[in-house]
Structure formats: C-alpha cells, structure tokens
Length: 275
Image 1 (cartoon, rainbow, N blue to C red):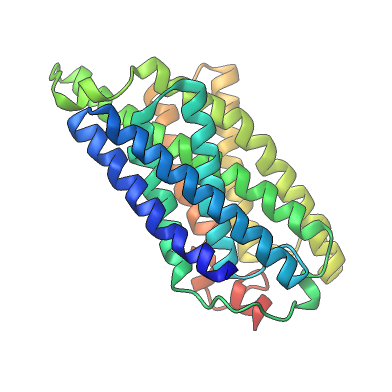
Image 2: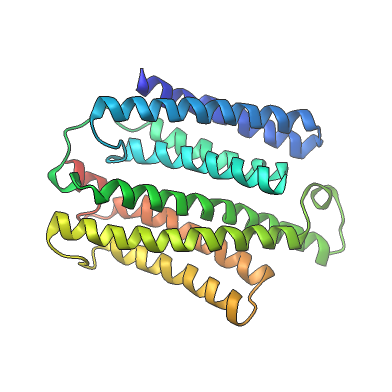
C-alpha cells in the first residue's frame, strides 16, 4: 500500500506541473489553483506513504535510491508550497513542479522493496544527516528555478523585448530576493548536513572524513554556495552572477546526489550501501 501511494504521487505531480505550465502559457488563474491543489493532494498522500513505510520498515525510509528520490520529490513540493505562500508567486510552479515530478518519476523506476538495513546505515545520525540535506537541496532547487527565471527575464529587459515571457515572470528584484532567501536557509542546512554526515561516517566507518568521491563533491558544492553567500554579503554579488551561481550550485547538488552513483568506487554509493 505504501509503495502504491509513493508511486501514485508521480501522476499527481505530473498533473500539477502541467497545470502550472498551462497557467504560465494562458495566465488563467484556474490553472495555478488546480496545480496547487494537485501538489497539495500529492504531497499529503506522499507524506502518508512515507509514514506508512517508516512503520513497516522500522527505520526512516531514506536508505536506498528509491526512497531517497521519492523523499527529495516530497521535500521539493513542501518547500515550493511554502515559497508560493510567502511570495504568492504562482508562476514559480511552472519551474519547480516539473522538478518534483522528475525526481518522483526516477524513483518509480527503482527497486521499491524494503531491504535489510546495512549495518553502516544503522545510525541515529543518518536520518538527521539525510533529512537536513534534502531540505537544503529543496531550497537550492527553488533558487535554481528562480535563477533560470531571472536570466530569462533579464534577457527580455536588456533586449527591450517586453513580450509574453516578460509579462508572466516577476520582477528581477523579486527573483533575486527569492534566490537570496533560499540561500540563507539552504546554506546553513547544507553545513549542518555535512557535519552530521561526518558524525555518521565516524559511527559507521571509524573516520569523520575520508575524501570519498561523495564527500569531495559535497565539499565542492558547499564551497560554491559559501562563495555565493560570501560574495552577496561582502561585495554585493546580486542579480545575474548570483543567478548563475545558484544554477551551477544546484547542478553540483544533482551530481553529488545522483552522479556519484555512476562512479565505480566509493562507499557512499547506493550500490555499495545496499549491495
């Protein structure tokens, strides 16, 4: 039942994403309202499925690729809905909802059976580490979407082509504000996630840091966001530069989360942890 719930939310996220895209094309409010409703229903069912799997598995269900992809999609939906409430920026759904659908779809193609827990994963630090990191990643996903929208809007403004895209997107200042707010929440959580990850590593493998490919990629991601935050606070990095770094940072997040699993070596890969 819980697996069916988790996988069925993919369809709800798809419908929600399509309705938000319908809204951005037609500017009909009904599309955005329905899109939000489908994401809300999908998020609720998703959370219910997550709780049911927690009870059935006896541990926090974020220990394999199916569970992690699914949980990431859930957190993206949650962070997006909070951002939409805060900024009343419905057009953001046309950029963020497809991300939630994509990660949910990827999870649907993974093995979904509850697996015996690897001893290395049997740590109280692991759920803290993973949940905090995915919340950070979700804020970075929203910043990524805001960055894309910023570059599109800026191109319209500089080219003095105030066409359909210009009318649908918010102002550059609003997009830059969203980027900054997501960074100020996401970066501390990323930092906490890396610290708790090192505590888990000490518990699992007897060392806080071993320059594993995933640890190295995580550090590179942290440095990009640290540089962005430092630049904003000290030398006034804003606008285009901040948007580009938000996009680069999120691509590094995706590589750290998924790309590392394509490498043959590394004890952090899902294949190594669940093999």
